[in-house]
Length: 143
Image (cartoon, rainbow, N blue to C red; front, top):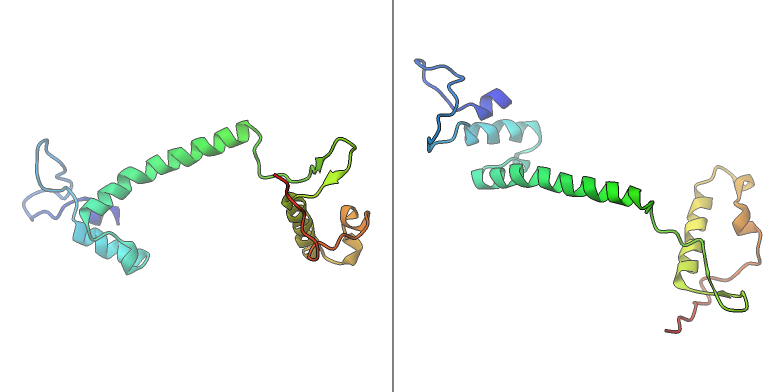
């Protein structure tokens, strides 16, 4: 794949590894061969038949990878491993103020229960308190 697409087609009198000379205007690869080989490797519409699109992809792919790598490193540095809705909003008397985060946390716990093997592994934090009809009442958000 690499040899057939990145090395331009040569004649019988010159080496296949002739390469690039400074200032040349023609490409050192054959875009038609690259399109054909890559189209057979993945599928036809995943390959580049336009050299500008190929060059943009080859330039943008490492940049996007570096961005996402730095985003992941900074996320782990600040210990931001996901949204955590385990703490409820509490008023001055210590009562829980119901928010949509509580509803979302309850739904997440319910989905965790569905993936357990059997009813004996029912989580204690769902089984411990009084049942709150989540679908019948919605928390009032006072703004």
